Length: 335
Image (cartoon, rainbow, N blue to C red; front, side):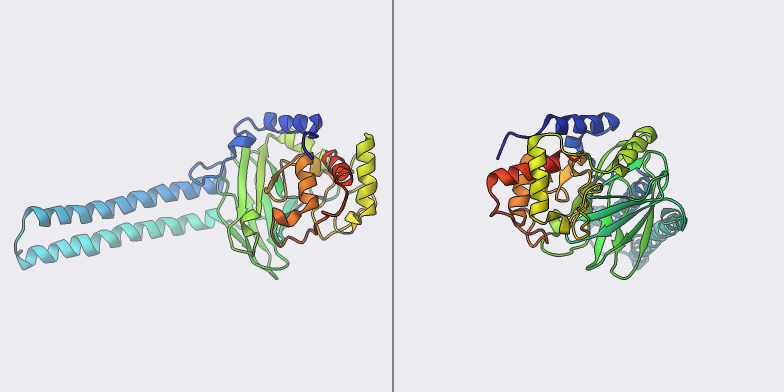
């Protein structure tokens, strides 16, 4: 089952990477110390200020230790009290108090309440993947996809989070801090990326067996490229064009895949699993577990649990290899 990744796959990926020159797919940014968003920039600055504050306390304690080593023997009680008051009380209180005040001043700006109306991105933490829905963007209806988020650079975008089962935590280190997704509650965040690129996100709260396989990417694009992408995502799935894709669509229907997955423009209307309307255009499969090509599609469909233990996706290892290949070609062609 190797060697049938399509040229269209490589072309689509090349277009994405051309739109985000700051970071190629192989160089996805994952560090909170290389900020690419308004909130992440504030968090990184706070980190370095805290490092400087800790350095001041350490230097004072080190100076006292060196003084004691340089002058062994008993000390006057007055000198000892002075060292304790300066090094053990005054310095930590002043430095830590200043850091506390500085952090409290930053908090309202970091988590400023977002507007309750208007366009937003709704993200639901599933086990173990991310359901993403763009609501109110453009003139079309909602756009639903999975495990991949795209944003226009330099613009504030409101996010709304929820979870139907267990606690998850949405975290894109290069763009912002963590936000918990709690069953029965809705949490919010405003992301404002300030440079283009591809940024890694992950679930930061242990949520079950495949918690480590619950990743996603955020692609920050220029506004014009983002608008083109969103229009393409709002369109229905393209019709199969090759004999293999036609056979794959028939096999997809025959094996009941549409009971769990939706493909807009077809009879597949399932809501349990990810929306597959344009799954072939995404950078990764299975929440960052596999690359996005036809070989990986076939491996995932044949035995999903080998890559993501206890995933709700049932294995289809009993399908003939030719049928697995056809379904994989069909899904890979959904650009």
